[in-house]
Structures are given as structure tokens and as C-alpha cells.
Image 1 (cartoon, rainbow, N blue to C red):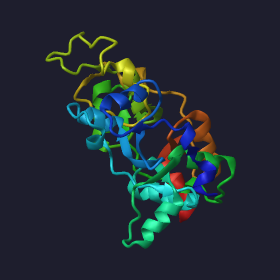
Image 2: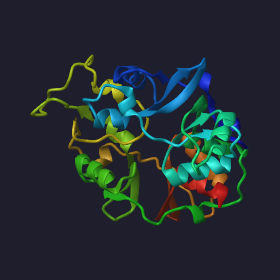
Image 3: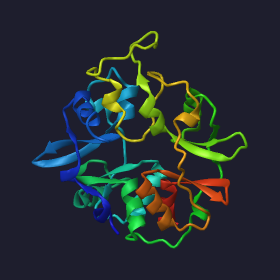
Image 4: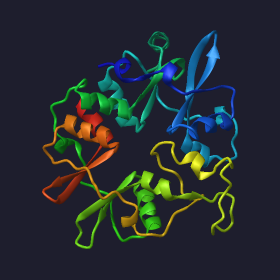
Length: 301
């Protein structure tokens, strides 16, 4: 498969246009389940890709208003690029959304010199990690591998009785979007993700003391306005998290795989259960974890 077979085309992608402000991006992040929005600019009648503005950047730079100063430097690809190549790009660069630009413009620019293709070009769409995993799940992108060779034995864990703010810090310092909860006997009892934390957190930005004081629902950064914008991690300096134990917020119905589970079946479980990682078990013993990006690696090795 090529990127064109898996991507979301431009007409179905929400974009913001230069010149613009953070308000233009907020309007979409508050209403849609996006973690970032592509920035484009019209040039000679063509819509050119210029960068991405992410939710994280908006939070980390609350005083910056201009889109041109908020854009992330994210690599782009072309519609005729193979899915294996874009999977490698996502894995190597740690990017979950890759803009797709016009291949003719990219090829012409490549011939002008330099090893790296330009980021600008006519915007054609977006391809995501989920798009690639979906292609694996449906069998459109074939691989005969099992998850055993594409998993990690380093599993982020926490005690199910730990206060939720402690577990949140564990996610933050481990720089992962999940933690496996363990019971009193050290057995897996559930999975807590950053989405679970986002669902119960509250914004306290601008308050010297958190207490029970939260911004009005119409405030620019009211929690209801930003909690549903994807599963990427939020900095915690401006939020308050309940003190209840992890067991009150985790998912107890854990979807797992074994070492011999095929890559395709693992992809199907991720898509059907809307998860980005699957604990790997031998019997009832937790032995590793498989992330969606690990499945991408199986396509080009």
C-alpha cells in the first residue's frame, strides 16, 4: 500500500490558515478529537502546507498568539510513498501524524539539492499511526510476524492503591501514556491511561490556590473545552487531579496478547477496543507490552 491508500484526504482534514492566531486552532481543538491541526497558506491558488500546531504547544506557550510562532517542525511525506516508508518515518521521528504534500513539488525541490526534502508543498492530507494500524488490521498491509519480536519487556506499572496524582506523575516521568496497575499480590488488575486521567482532571490555570475554584465553562481553557482532543499527554502544572486510588479510575477489562499473537490480530484488537497498547501475558503472568508504534516497526524490518 501507498500513503494514498490509507491517508485522510485534504477535503476531510480540518486546517487553519496563515496568517492566524491561537484562537483559530482552539476553535477546532475544542470541538473535535484532534491532538494537532495542520497549518496551511494559499500561494498562487494552491493550498500549501506550512506546519502543525499541537494542543501541547498551545498549553506550553499560553502567551503566544501568532500561529507562525506556534507551529511544530514535523516531517512530511507524499501520497505515493509506501506505507512501509511512512511507518519507518513515524517510528524514527516519534510522530503520530504526518502531513501529506504534493509529490511533484517535493521531487522538484529534492533535485535542487540537499538530502532532506522541504516541508512546504501543496497540502494533500494527513496519515496517522492509527491509519497504518488499521491497514494492518484489515490485511491491506501484510506482515507474518508475531508480537513477540515487537514488544518491550519494560512495562510501566503502578500499585492499584496509589493515589491518582502519584500515578499521573509516574506517567509523566516515564514519558508513556499508560501504566499497568498491580494488586496486592503483584498481579495485573487493570490499565490506567492518560485519557483516564484527562477525563477526571480539572483546569486550575490562573488560580493561586486550587480549592474548588475552576474557570467558567466559557473560559478559553475550561476543561470541557480541551479534554476531548486526543490522547496525547497534557502538562500538569495547571490541572488538579482527584486523590482517589488508581483502582477507581483504571480499566479493569484489560485487552491482552500473547507472545504468539500475530501482528494483524494485535492491530485488530487495538482498533476494535480503541487502545494504543496491549499488555503481553504468558498465562496470567505479565511479560511485556505492545504499543501501536511497535506494530509499525514490523512493516519495514
